[in-house]
Length: 178
Image 1 (tube, rainbow, N blue to C red):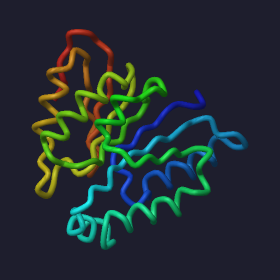
Image 2 (image 1 turned 30 degrees about the vertical axis):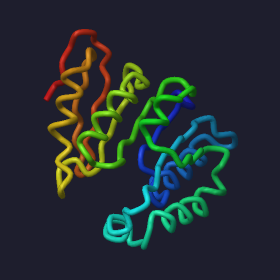
Image 3 (image 1 turned 90 degrees about the vertical axis):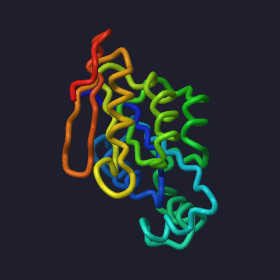
Image 4 (image 1 turned 135 degrees about the vertical axis):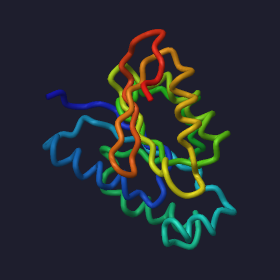
């Protein structure tokens, strides 16, 4: 199969997803990994209750420190940046994003901005998985469906437990299959 590609993650948190991905990339692509993993999180201050309840850590600052320690040995694969994901999309210069994992703020307005800014970076056959799509107070599913229906490409849903993914099938003028 093809080696290499670009993975983007919106919402680094404590770095667990990036860590697992980096270990897998290093193992599969040894001795010289070519896949790059870019992860973004603004670690917003004032979100201590959210961090404590969802990550088991007391603050965004603590989560950021945990991620930095965990991802340090994988700097050849992972680039972790402290920035708002919408701002990251505006300045993105690393080409197409083959897989864009969205586990960012679950506010509908923020998600709308994320999809509008990152969507054009996902090429045909690219995949956009969403975490936390069907539970809790998030209820992002209506916003995701509105986005893929409004885009001029065909997005095919793929559901696997807590992860909802859409694949860009590339057909112009098509609608979301949902």
